Amino acid sequence: MKNFKIGIVVADYDEYSPFLESVNIYNPKEYKYFNRSAVTFDMGNASVICINCGIGKVNAATAATHLADIGCTYILNFGLSGGISGVKRGEVVLPDKFLEHDFDLTGIGYKPCEKPSQKYIYDADKTLLQTAQAAIGKCEHGTAVCGDRFVCSVTDRDFLRETFGATTCDMETAAIASVCDIANIPYLSLRRVSDDAGDDAYANYSDMNTGEGQTLSEVFLKVLNALCNEVNL
Image 1 (cartoon, rainbow, N blue to C red):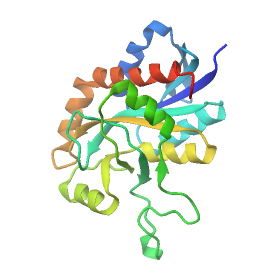
Image 2: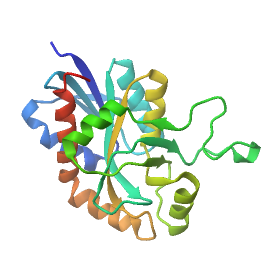
Image 3: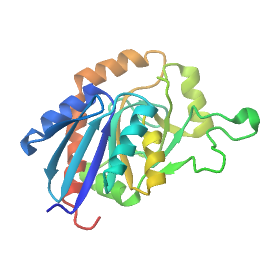
């Protein structure tokens, strides 16, 4: 009998597919989460459920809610991110903070991203961070900003850096973090920098997504293996 259950949210199929190939040795069983692909398998001390949720905050939050509802002990995420500051293309990042950069009530007096009477800057779980760091070695940390917009201009990139101190940007992490915070489930995200969020971001993202996804899944698998075999979590 397994000791705990790990849920994984992956947005893009080009990120999800290489991961499926890398876990074939565990005989994953596929099931449908609404009309999305999902798999479950046993690994080490854990049962693992991985959902290919689709891109964007709503999809990510819905998948995270499902994983919370079925009793996941931890929720993880991996994918590609735009680099905002202090990171280079190809680097691996373990964000320690998450916020939604497109949540905006500044017109009625709130700070950027601030949600009335709610938490709005979310933290990665420190124990999961330590385990992941030990598994993959040197990597960057920082604030991941999340919004339903692909950042591909120098102006927008500089705004995110100057306003939020952002390290990376993506379209899912803070939405998952929000659900995990409400459900009191430890959360960890691993991201790989695909572009610099500037004017040529889309071309660089596409190249990284189709050409180096296997490397990303292999790095994440190191983290997953460490967590599934860690007895002191």
